[in-house]
Length: 197
Image 1 (cartoon, rainbow, N blue to C red):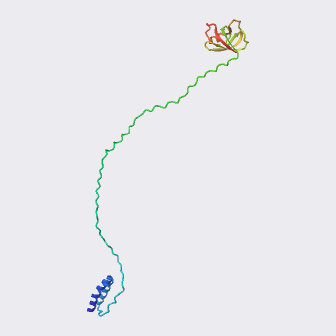
Image 2: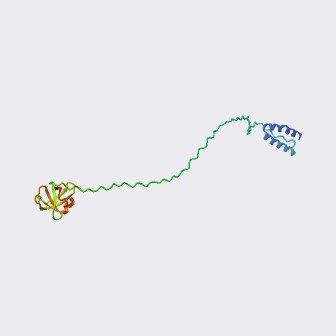
Image 3: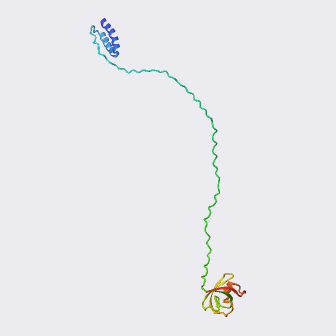
């Protein structure tokens, strides 16, 4: 028993150096067997094969840290705050009404001038008691429609020859009183006219 204990004291530290876990287990087994009274039992053969064991080893390396302090000086010039925008002013404007579209004034209707008769003569005209719309001529045929125009005013009338006038030098027509009054006053008696037929 003393031999086994001595052996255990020598072998166990050696095993711990070689393979710590295996040697511990084997030593425990051997020690426990000795306690059971197996005196003189041969010690188990040691496994002399090289064993490789890789353990995860973590290293913590502390490096000296250098703290660099940079001081930056910023100079800020405070500008005056912008002036507030003026409030929108609502100005009521009187909008003039839209002008009415221009409408061209109708042109006065000018009566077309009477056609110029192919035959004209100038002389004096007088009036006598004849029916309305008729006149007397020294030379024109009965039924001839004659245009009589006052030379001084441009007014004109139309009459139909239905009587023969006595020949009077310079006189070309005698009119019914209604026609003569459209050209001049009856009190005038005689006017200068132009005949056309």
